[in-house]
Amino acid sequence: MSNPVKLFEPLTIRQTTLPNRIVVSPLCQYSAVDGVAQPWHFAHLSSFARGKSGLVFTEATAVEARGRITPQCLGIWNDAQADALAPVVEFIESMGCVPGMQLAHAGRKASTSSPFSKRGPVPLTESDAAEAGAPWQTVAPSPLPVADGWHVPAELDGDDLEEVKKAFVDAALRACDSGFRALELHMAHGYLLHSFLSPLANRREDDYGGDLDGRMRYPLEIADAVRAAVPDGMPLFARISAIDGREGGWSLEDSVEFSRRLATAGIDIVDCSSGGIGGAPRFRSDDDGKPLTRDSARAPGFQVPFSRAIREQAGIRTMAVGVIIDPRQAEEILQSGGADLVALGRELMYDPFWPLRAAEALGVDPDFRMWPAQYAWAIDRRAQIKTLNES
Ligand SMILES: Cc1cc2nc3c(=O)[nH]c(=O)nc-3n(C[C@H](O)[C@H](O)[C@H](O)COP(=O)(O)O)c2cc1C
Image 1: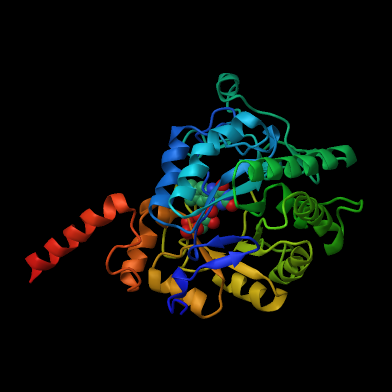
Image 2: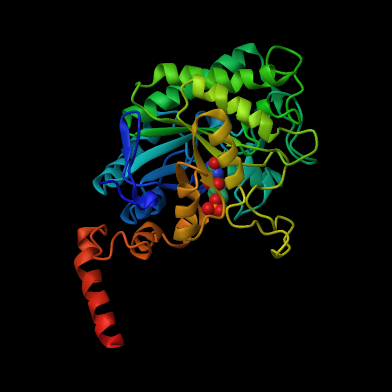
């Protein structure tokens, strides 16, 4: 009998079965060295598997060096980078969860400094530059900086377009070889592929710009090339910004059409985020240093309507993300057809055991059987003691 609680119903996508519908949204850690994962990455990603998130995505992992957001971003363009992730993959699998990788190219938003060091495009000074290993020449569909004071990107020409495409394919193959069992193409948040889609960033006059077909062409070519290269059984996600949220920008209608085309290209899940085509860091409403207010804070589930619309109109599975914080809220999104999967970011950083607590709250795991054996027996006792003391 299938589990009446949808959040804990497995989902099979091609040849990968996710044990539940809870996904760790990609979360940049700005802590890699030369693109190579460090002990921090092991601790960070493993904690989500201990907490039993069904699918654990790596942070945006650059397919080539100039595609890193910061010099400290994770990469997958060489074997040393892949090898360093092997223990992460092994641990996630050992917990019965699925390791996934988000493949990314930051485009004109590359070559910046991490949010917890010095904000914005590097270098701030020459000595900062020497220390940070940046700046480098960024690339984009058109030579338009993200905002005043940012690097002016070089326009990608025909050869470069092929080179970046090959970088995506090589990275995808390396990720498959490393044991990742789901891949996500980052087409959101103002990074390279999103900047091809949005009329606010793409001013090309060749086949890769102009009308919607032209602007979709390069991201779709990447999706096609990756799909053709990886094994048939490998699930492919695409994260999109469902709207730019700016006048004259990419719209939800565009996203529905793009999602139809992604489905044809063999993408299995559209991960529905939004925004980021402008300069400000996407997930800080307080980027000017002001505290959050009720108006600037995002409401719970604010991007779910995008996921619902794409799911209903484009005939493709979707993932909802953005201020999903409560187990009942997550369950309602799935039950009501708003998405096939829910991704959580900050809530899982705050509490990597969120899925196990959700299972308890929704009555799926009253006996703590889902917890890792190393903890389950002791936690069970803890619960019994608590009940006795309260009675
Ligand atoms: C610290 C941090 C790092 C992030 N890194 C990425 C990333 O690497 N790739 C990406 O697509 N989104 C990234 N995001 C966005 C998250 O994946 C997620 O979409 C967003 O935080 C909204 O979900 P939440 O409200 O559950 O946190 C990041 C967000 C945060 C807070």
